[in-house]
Amino acid sequence: MRRVFGCCLLSLIVSTSFAWDDTGHMTVAQIAYDNMKPSTKAKVDALLKKNPGPDFTDFVRSATFPDQLKRYGIKSFNGWHTISTPYSTDDSKTSKAGKENVVWAIDQCVKTIESAKAPGLEKARALRFLIHFVGDVHQPLHAVTLFSKEHPDGDDNGREYKVDVKAEKPQLHAAWDTAFGIYRDYDDSRKADLKEIRRLADAVEKTLGKPNLEETDPKAWAKESYKLAVKYAYSLPEGSKPGPGYITTAQEICQQQIGLAGLRLAKLLDEVFATPGAK
Image (cartoon, rainbow, N blue to C red; front, side):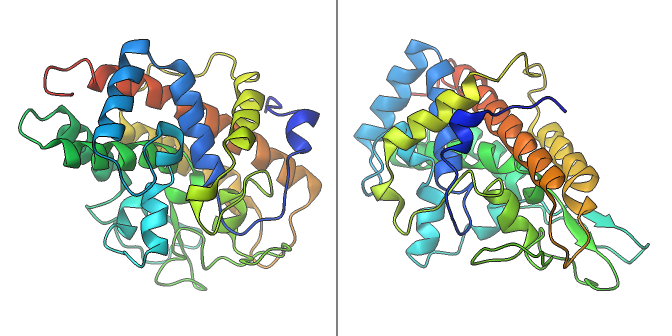
């Protein structure tokens, strides 16, 4: 696999708890903002400022709004962040992913923004969710749940799959959320350092190359993430310590997915805000 980060990015690695969900999501948003059309930028900026969430009026910081809701104790949307496509290593019985998942949520957000009838407040909320969910669907552990004798009810997108890492949450899901230390979380994402996000986005954008932007179906995005999780994430035996090779590959994949999510989000928003009902 092509190496997608260098020393400039490695110097930003910090200790963390669980976040592709703050600095990672904001990096996706920054890349999207850098690459969307000027007319799209004007429309999303106007929508967010006209109908602000609590301190989430700028596009980049808005990427963390769905996770900030969790910190407010609002759990109604928790199931919208993932699609638990089943994966079994030993022919264990599996269960299908729920219908209200991240792929479904992306579709609902797009329909809301494009609707001529939806009020601006709902469009603004849908935009904040959409920014976040496009990032989520590109995270491999957001697209799979492992079923095995050890996890007959599934491992909850890798949250129950324990690994030997020095972290507050020693689980496979959390390790991949952070890209093994590149991204970090804030207790309150409204306090996020946007200069840090700019540095992270610049580091990723320098390595983007020519990613596949022809694939526009979120279902296909989820399948891509699923395949990455099965081939790479779950290659680490449960309870074991990831070696340098595994960590390097995981970081490369996460950076690749962050960049891809940002570019795909930009293209999606360009298309959405070109429709007559989106304003």
